[in-house]
Length: 304
Image (cartoon, rainbow, N blue to C red; front, side, top):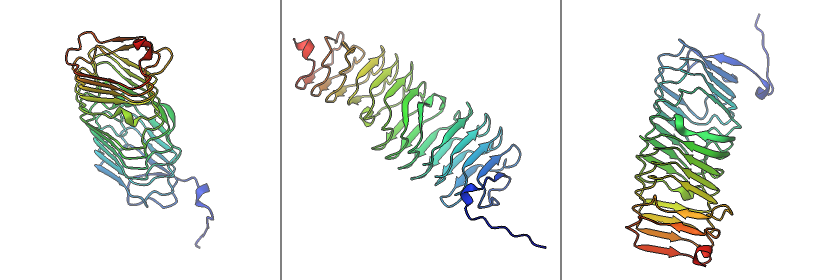
């Protein structure tokens, strides 16, 4: 005797599947669980747009995907939970997220060693647009060398922290991405290999803190709309061109502009209506400065 049942609305089905074969996952499964010993042979995890379309949760147990080196995800816009225990993806080196992917209201619960060996992250355009949280801490990316974010991606995060990351060479951030970032904190002796980073992409950033000995290879720095900035000694020592845009660094408590760490700077350009509460500018030891441009209504307290 054959039993038959029909489901009118697959969105109400809760069906967790313990994966042992990526080619045998039922279409209506809502949750995937990867346990140790079931998928050890997988080195490249590829999720295409039309696969796993009903999946709302993914759990990777300890050593659940220990053989995976590369992860490539397209789609999964209904995913609500991604939980990876310590050791679950400990050998991943490359992560690629295709355009218009992972746009659900997601909760990330990631083990501390998940990002330890990752060398390259590529995020396409229109991805992770509903990620929320106070902080994104990139400090766990010990071996990261390359980070690419397409346009209109990764919005919802307010604060960003970066410590170390001294192997990071290439950084690209597309327009409209990381738009909600208001504060960036860069730790001591960090990002020593980055040659170029466009801070003006962070259009809503209010505060930038760079501890001592960081970002020594950057030659050009443009800042727009900041309210407060703190730069430790020895940081940004290679900057030759410093541009501060219009309506920047006007916090009432920002009274002193210390430029002494910019020991290689040759050109400083300050836009209009900026640094309006600054009363002193410290430029001791800046021997390379050749050009200083100040826009209207800027540094008025100093000029008085």
